[in-house]
Length: 63
Image (tube, rainbow, N blue to C red; front, side, top):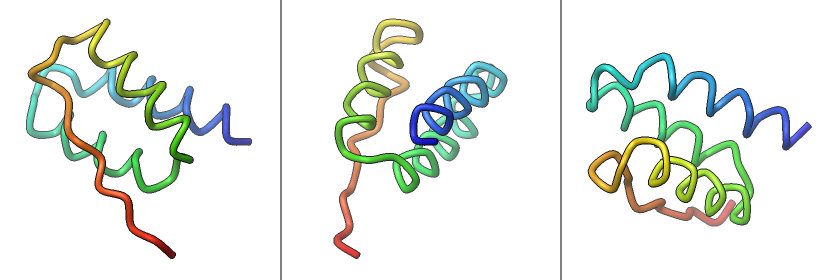
């Protein structure tokens, strides 16, 4: 299921990439639902596909 969440997050980010504020909002949401190693993969994917300016530093919250 986790891989599906990662792929779903990527699809959403592609769709909202026209607006950097919306993109960052969706990226922050994705961070909440992914595991740490998946977050790193998503960050790398964002850097490759959209550039450094679209990245956010993830904030990890212990549950």
